[in-house]
Length: 166
Length: 166
Figure 1: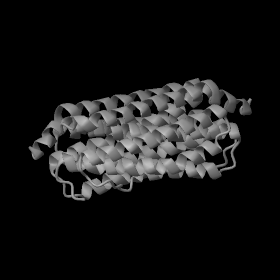
Figure 2: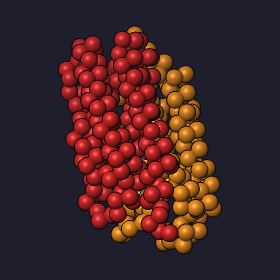
Figure 3: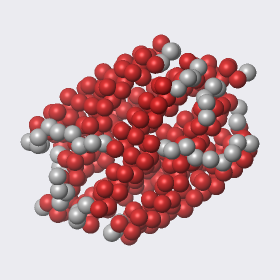
């Protein structure tokens, strides 16, 4: 796809986040299985449900823009998920792994916050009021999920992980 | 490096962000040269200065923890920067490229917000009060840089880029 206008850049970024979300649908169940803390497993399960909703919203967005529903390889998310996969294969204590899983998940969330944040400002500039709200809803959910993970880290997971060194 | 404790995970994450910051010292001058808007060029130049300060703080952090100053390949940032490099080689109108450069730079910022955010919570949990403030200072600067880019996109760069389709 050749980029000539901001509209082209907008569509390419939609293809990028579509690829990112699709990768997450595969990665999140593995992260949930690797988590030992039940609250963390639940957080990942809930993130998976939200990711599926984001995919539906993206499908609607492509339809509304009358563009073919297609993904473009998202190198950023590929790299972030690769870091997470190597963690799953390491011989780590369960409680420390939980803390590291949250770290990876927050990198995922922040990639998506940046991507949906840009998509929202571009949708606004381009006058796509109809798709703007869908993108904003996904952005709000990413920000909320990130806060949930921070709370979980501070209140539950990190205090358990640190006891190992005492 | 084998991860056994949260302290090990903390050091590994410091090695990861060190690699990320080192890559940025190389990438930001290219992004500044590719930017056509003078305010954006200035924003990238200022980010480069801050990145150099973050590197100095990391060096101090490794010294205070009495750990060797060394980097671990940061796959996430490698992927994000790769996306940005492919953009630099594309035949794009200058004003649209500026909008896309901001998008890439915000993905960079958000990766670092996630990384420094985790490092701060881990430093707090581990009782590393001395290094905590340095990490928090870098985190605050990343958040401020991200806001600056959003303002620049909304007020200057996006309105210029969208005129091309009118």
